[in-house]
Length: 198
Ligand code: AMP
Image (tube, rainbow, N blue to C red):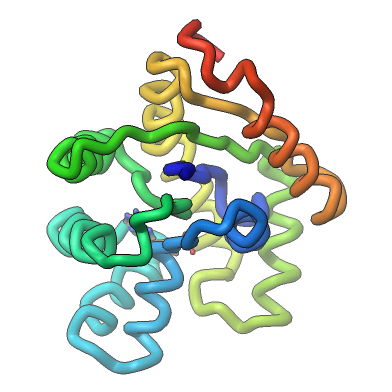
C-alpha cells in the first residue's frame, strides 16, 4: 500500500513517470490535468470551466479542483493506494488534501519531486507542443506555467520536506533510467525515517 504524490514542473516527465510508477506499484494514478483534459474533450461543464484557465496556463480555481479530487479519492480503486499527479499545486490544496485524507484516517507515505532546469523544460515542452498540439504549450504559456510552479508549487514541496516525506529525483535522462531511480528511491528503507528536511 502506497499513498504518494508526484510533483514536478511542466515538462519534467511527471505524467509519464506517474503512469510507470503506478503500474510497478500496482496503485492507481490520478492526474488532475488528465481529468481536466478528458472533460474538455468530452465537452462537459467542468471541461468548459477548466479550459479557460488551462489555455492561459493558469491554475483552475480550488473551488473546482478540490471537489473533483475529493470525489475521485472516494472511489473504490484507491483502497490499495494511489499516486496523485499534479495535485496539490498550492499550499491551500495541501491543507485541503490533508483534510480529505484525515477524514479517511489516511496519511501520505511519500512525496516525490522530479527536478529539471527551466531551459531544458522549455525546450522539451516546445517539442511536445509540435507533436501533440496541446493548446497550453506555446512559449508564453509555458513560461507562465513555469513561473507558477516556482511561485506556488515550490512552497508545496517545502511543506512536505518539513514533514520528512519528500524525496527528490533528477528528471534528466532516459525514461527507463528515471523510473529506476524513482523506484530505488521510494523503496529504500530510509524512506520510513522520521528525520525531516530531506
Ligand atoms: P498538468 O497536465 O498537470 O500539467 O495540468 C494541466 C493544467 O491543468 C494546468 O496547467 C492547470 O491549468 C490545470 N491543473 C492541473 N492540476 C491542477 C491543480 N492541482 N490545480 C489547479 N489547476 C490544475
